[in-house]
Amino acid sequence: MLIYHFTDLESALNIVHSKTFRAHSSDIYNGDSGLNSFPILKGNFNYGQNFTKEGVILVFDWSGNIDKNASIYKYTHTMDRNTMYIQGSWRSFIPVNADSKYLKAIKIIYDSSVINELIEYPFYYYFIPNFFKDIKSKIYKKCKLEVHKQFIELFKDKDIHISVI
Image (cartoon, rainbow, N blue to C red; front, top):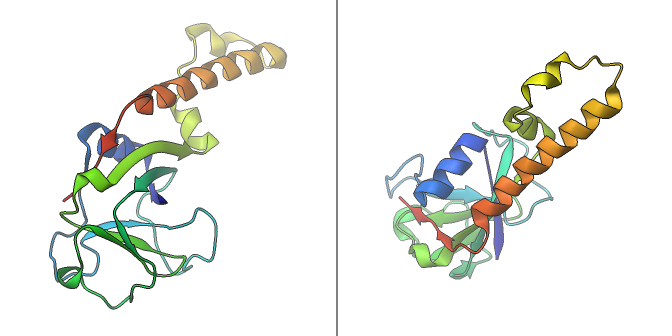
């Protein structure tokens, strides 16, 4: 099952490269000691939720057990570590110490503001007058394509299994 974790680019890349998601809390008596995500990409989110990091969505594939009717009042110490708990359309949760064989990072979804931060323009780009918009647009598209290719290569032919600690 695909799940969606909202974060920033630096954190997403750190998770993928280290193959580790570090929970905000590792206290098993805390209801948030694990990986929070959304079970759907669009839907009725809890609008009171606050995101500390935004800009990208790290997409995971969970292949372990799933509890689709989990109580929001369940604490991590009562959860099976290899079960993902879905608490409505606004939260899916994987407890700390889940076996990494069940959680696989498969891609990063990002918006244009993130990609614009990553683009490395050729040195002469800034010297081209805005009058030549077509030329600048072609350079932008080529640079943007290079960034897309880097993200595709990051996941291509790789099993990136993630530990939740």
